[in-house]
Image (tube, rainbow over all chains, first blue to last red; front, top):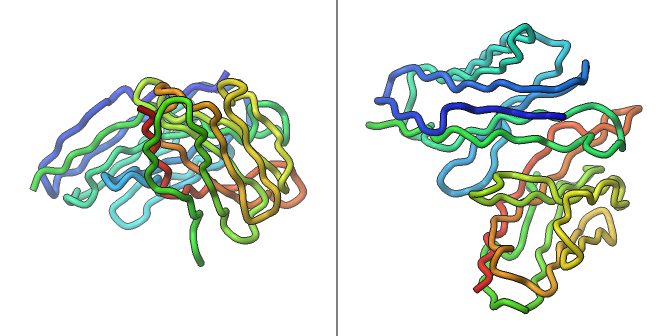
Length: 119
Length: 118
């Protein structure tokens, strides 16, 4: 069974601070995909990143960086020098390979972490 | 390019009424997904289509829910009759198919339809 755990329900930081959002996942598959999505107050879901389970390289995109560690089944997300516009709910998600098998292509979402950046 | 388009953005209806939610996927995408977001259950997949064919509807809550995809550019999710517990945000997402597989690539979400059943 697939499971994504985001233990941090809410985080508040002061603008310009760095913040790390934790994501721990469970899967029996050897090939899977990990994602982060952002849900700002307006409600839409915005794609941030997708990683293949075979690619453990960390990634940096501007102020965003992601640390993927298969040994600890974690895919953490760090925002550097946070800004008020980063305030949102962030979701980590997992999907498995498997073509048209039941459950494949399904995004299993964590419960989300609400980040508030205080000016 | 336009993203996933959903309509209506907000819907308020009374218990027992029929509700139809609409989705236009990104042009060229092969997969279409319907998700529901509630406080109690979070984000959960209801059904998805590949090339207009329903593949996995195991997440559809009950027979009151039905979904169709008559062509590559349009899908509907219908609830009949609606109940207060159906109140949620319903998201549509679409994605390309990975070449040579039946796997979807990154799913891109629409803005959602916020449904309130009184």
